[in-house]
Image (cartoon, rainbow, N blue to C red):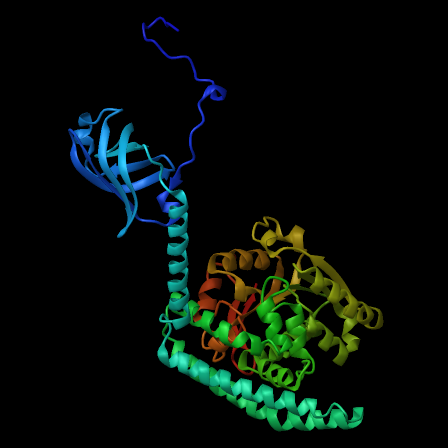
Length: 490
């Protein structure tokens, strides 16, 4: 077709009329470092990596060859073309130049093998062997765990042997009770648990202290490598504890869900075996576990104090409410306060809200307390513009553990949103695991429970941007000092 400029442009090629092309295999995909070498009449000897190949051709990249590309012509013959994978020869024969492509200073030369074809089965077998060698070498490196500390591996081996011995002994003792009557079996199991659980708990406590010494100075990559090894070696044993198993499995997507909180508040001797029960007692009585139990009283006391000074019903909101055990405890001990209480409960989990509805509805009926249940994603509140319309005005807003999972930026945004929802004189009470948590590494390694630890100074700094300026900012702690609470008065 002739255009007004005088230029001649070819008709667009109909894709349906293109000739079929042989499939090309990329050497990179085959995980092979193929090279080719040969002799061209004008260019002379050449060699370079093979970029792709088919059963009748190879494409060879000649480094810095673009400046001499004029020496090649399509149809030129190349003598003695050889294709190698390291020291192993895959092909030798003549070839014809069929394609030339400049790549910066390099030159890609497409060669058609003449007359013999390349044995692709040999290429595939070589690729398979190379891939298998790489996988084996990776497996050997991983099994050697060279990226972990030798003293950590020794500590882990010793702990695993101790736990396996304890499990074997307790399992054998339980099997020996199979023929006993129910009453005898129950008493004997309790005697065994009373005798052995303290030893297992003490051994796990010692292991946690030693773990802290071993990993405290590692960087993020180091922690991941050591956690991975511990999970491989210990999770099958630790999972005998229902609390630890739920932490590992994360059925709701995260550790610390409402059912894990419930496990902290009920009988700790849970498990299908005595070994599992002993481990469960340890896991639910660590420093951080005890701090979560202790915070019920702290939060309940703040609600109680607010009720005593309230005019009418005290409007309370719990963010990330979980099982709302603190409200249950308060009303069980002081049911007469129910008529003064109006509580909004927010959680992103359907299970948590359904649980709260089932346990708090009877309390509402018997005490006169009002409850409002809301299943909402916390992410929604990070974009709230009118907090009063969303939450209503509140006298007290609290959160036991949600802020443990929020980075500083999200923490500040949600903090301001909740602060805006307070009446003048209203209070925020927001929990966070303390930076000095002695159970930190046991929590992360044994329980696979990751949270953001913060100091009292960091919590104060996060509240320093609030507007209008609070009348009071203090830091409280439950008795163990492991759970801190940012306490803000508007």
